[in-house]
Length: 212
Image (cartoon, rainbow, N blue to C red; front, side):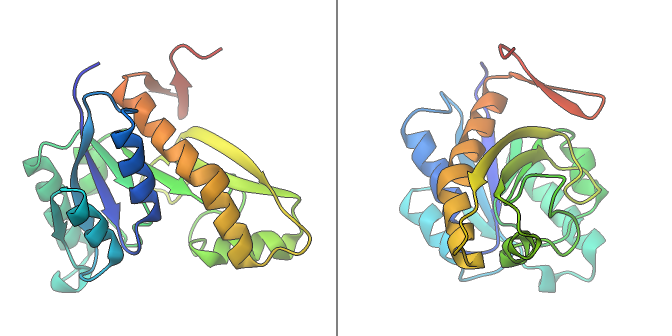
């Protein structure tokens, strides 16, 4: 298992970043670790989490770039210069283009707060996902960690975990339960599998070495 340098991309409070920091402190990632946090805007709490844990961070604000292409080029260059092996999107709400995907093929993962292919794709982010799930009356929801491809939320699935939906749930209570019971567990687990070189992508599916 080679040592991997991980970058975590954030746009807000960084609760999933904190889950990854906690997992690293427990030794889940072996010699690998978070080398860089990239925020899409200044002043977000995720940057404080990085600073208090001695992790380098940088702000790449979308408004500072003319278009998505220019922003994506800057992001790809930043990640390449930092010698990043794995890119984790943890509540990163800025659109990026193929320049980033091509620079890190099958090396970008995202956590989505639903069981893909349900409640995913354009417009399904944050509380919108949970509002849609409750409006549909689903009995279970959950979270998915997947490899990021140019098509939104359509990349190969690494891990999923189901979470029960309660009759009195609000979008906020369901969001919190899915974070606590699913996202904060399967995202670190997926990073661990990547760091252990146990993930193989074939025919748009992820195969985990050692699992039957």
